[in-house]
Length: 388
Length: 143
Image (tube, rainbow over all chains, first blue to last red; front, side):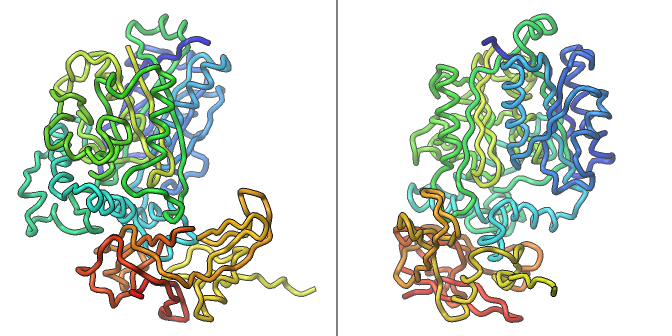
């Protein structure tokens, strides 16, 4: 069993409305990843396309995208696990390469959410949960994460201000990420003053500023076996651990509402596979679709004890110069969240960090990076460990 | 040979229903009768909410209905200021998870509960709730 390396990474600008088709959007990320490692399309012997198809007018997008990327006649596979689709795609690419079936695989995440209206999109997201027993009550993604926020606040004394601090950190780094949708620095006043739009209620206790926004975007990660990776790239980043788990879709089947057990299980698997502990992680990208999701990630990944997540943000330990820098690219809250593209974008950021190429976002000399990517309300959890 | 009738009783569940056919459609008749039911496995005895026709533990399909007629406690909740398409007229409403020990239930708090008085851990019971146009769901009340 050899190592599997990431040799090329790319992502499109994340925007509210992309002025092109899904295949053109996918090409933006593919071009950047291919140029990043200087690979010719003939060297890529399979592709994995990752997205949530309910936003697309196109049926079976994988074949259409593979053609536009010049990846015929190689096989293409379609992967969907809601918001974690492209980290699931990366895990499958790892399996294809590690098994020896393929030498070099491109993982393409893409989502053009603007093909449908914002209301339709909210309704579809609500249907990412149980349509038989829960959607008829009028559910939306913010409501589900709000159930977790309420329980966390009640049990551990976490406050709305703690959550606002997470959004503040996000905006600090969104400003310097030229691929992000939101690049304005926010103030605590804007996030907490009842008169401010950002502090308006959505699903109590979550406010507008606690929620990420829909976006159009794409990501591409090119992986290869050890021999090919070393031949093509002089700076491969290795996949050291890949954990994945699921939880019930129904809230009635959930044991706890203070953390996501799929994330915790995936993290334990990934740490074990990589032979490391949480304390060994130098830089992390976590799935902050809502501020509470980042706070729970601190605890589920072992960066903080259960109930102590708020202490990390209060002490600024997850800032760039802190003990464990998290989401130094602005995270989903600032970048925007194009469902199928998000995981690949997180992986790209960590790869750039490990290569020392993250520019103004660069963390000091990281050796181990972590990506935490969640689908649905902790329905799917993927934790990936990367190293130089 | 006439057209086979489809049992789509579940289409009346909630403000907007996204599915209509299920093996646990009798849940709807019980609701109309004033009862909220969970299901139990007739073979291994496990209780389920939402009700299910098939037991993942012992693979039995012998389903028994069990009335949820006791007190539970509020595990978590969220008051909604925005709703998805089709739910605008219901706003504001409060989604909740209630713990009945053997199982939990997801649903809404009754509209007559003042959101300011809601506390995690409070006692609640569940009862059917008539909606417009002959539709029906269940909500949680103070005992």
